[in-house]
Length: 127
Image (cartoon, rainbow, N blue to C red):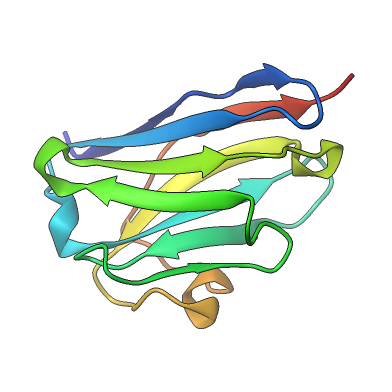
């Protein structure tokens, strides 16, 4: 029963904020690099942000840098994505994923290999 479960998505106006959570059960997140990915209808999956096992290193793609912040609370076995200044182009299903086989960075976010995936939470940014 090893699972990642995302929550916190919803409908927001442009400029609004959301905080997504990725809660793990059956696995200990401090063993894993955690990534956030998103996919809009008709679009390829896009890596957004990642965080290292200890939470001391993060990486975000340019399109969200300065607006999104990834963090983790290993004691609570949870990873967060704080999303500020949301834009319509941020509309997508957001997924968290974990891997014990890659470091957080651009290369990881452009890869497809992960050990576990959540089922996603929808973020819609619209007026």
